[in-house]
Length: 446
Image: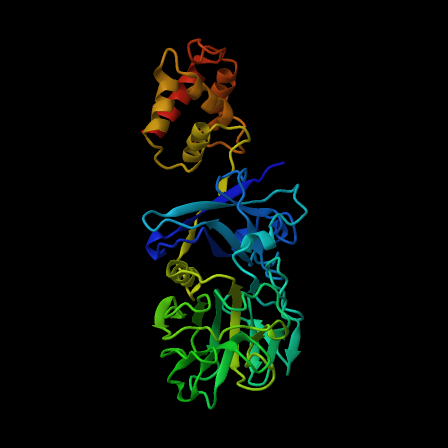
């Protein structure tokens, strides 16, 4: 059993910055059509499992994706999906498809770990409660807490919320490059634009020793990345709006290349080098909401944090800028197209295209028009034209919009009995009905 419907997802190339990265993970939100049939949508499975992403309209060539835990609503169709696609073009729009509604699907069709692959060693989206699960195969779940952390609606699904003394962390962590390169990132939103003391947003590091942390300093004036000896500072970070923060750290000993990005824009390059950034096995903490190394020791944050990530490489500027565009509040990075019917299995590419254009009931292009004209006028229309008509018969409903469908159906039945190479429409139909049908089809062609 195949999927019934599809819709295009078109990425705006003007929001893409050239990158050396192989993949981009695109966030896709839900839609009312993704609710279950019982709630006015098109999905059969109550967990949203009969929805996939693909490079073709039938789902024969699926893309790897993750459905965020506990994000799907069968009632409304809401959800958060992350789709791994080849890094998109910055010169022309990229199109892929969401394909959905399949009564034969009862299991999860995504690949959560595979979506992030070896590019990340921690991706925490945050969920409603409990341990905050890492979506990568590394398993850096944030399982330890201090204070009373809570989780609320964030920028993308749920977010971690701290009242000023709450935090979550993991120790020891797996996969950390103890002396770089690596990239630490998140979205955050401070409860107040003015902070009374150092506020640590996220960090990683050792027990009271070397660590890397993102700090908003008193007076809302600067933002500091601290690796014991390297303190690059930049402005525009203490904000009650959502801010995307990325710390891109080079290998130890690489001079002048520790990078700080805010909202996709490079802010500063650290002077000197980061040779002091070397974590011990006993002190590989990830912390969210307080200073790393000794969780609970201070520098607590009040506000929200979403999409905590760690990559074991220094991500490039193009990927960082494009990810910001695709995730920012009110993003127009992608456009979801209208619902379309998946063509019958086995259709050729040409036949699928013809069927899709006919279904849309808009002006078909010259190739489809020519196919219909040949069908009406040629003494020997080619096999492709015949095949188009034969496949149109099995579509649900009538792809043509004639006023009276009965003559059209009679012609289709006649064509079905039309042997290859014979004159078209040599079949036992009433001449008046035949002429009526021809008039309707000719009117539609215009």
